Image (cartoon, rainbow, N blue to C red; front, side, top):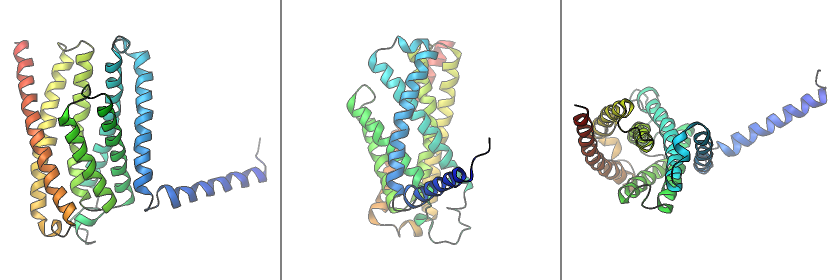
Length: 275
């Protein structure tokens, strides 16, 4: 049945009001940092609940876990979804987008940003806040002080980059390292489900080794080399931004090397048991 002219007019009116709301408030430059952080926090809650719901019906091992283990299971679902989202966005900005291209003559790359780049960083800030809250709430069940340091440094650097608009290219370079999170989480899921001796566990371990080597070791070398090549632009940043560009990636790089040593040791141990 055809809609009346009055109904069509009312629908168009609501659409226009919604567009105005989105344009003037949700994605308006002054509000993006806050709406994106709230979006990140809300997304974490939604993913947590969905992970709990899906796992209850489709994973037999889930119902046999302790309360703390189920909470960690759900929390790892959040970090996996965030990792997929931010890795895809980071790869786009670092390797495909023209926003940070040297061919663009729109000022120093250290001061370039867009509403989408700001929004993506805001979602990550929301995630780091939510995950830190979970870590402190269940401390040390979800991770020790090294996780607190890692998330705190990452959250501060991402938040500063979002609010100031400085150094977003290097922030996204570092965030590419989140590509290793789904594999790390899968390792925990397989171990918790009693599949530590399975082929899937071994294959996942090999994937972790190469993903970590590329995204958390070699990529950081590339980032520091890029900073060296564009140092004349980096030095123009505010003192806080300048400090964060060097200190945060350096500390994270040291932690990555330490964790990589543990990954290598664990992989050797797993392979030795197979022989």
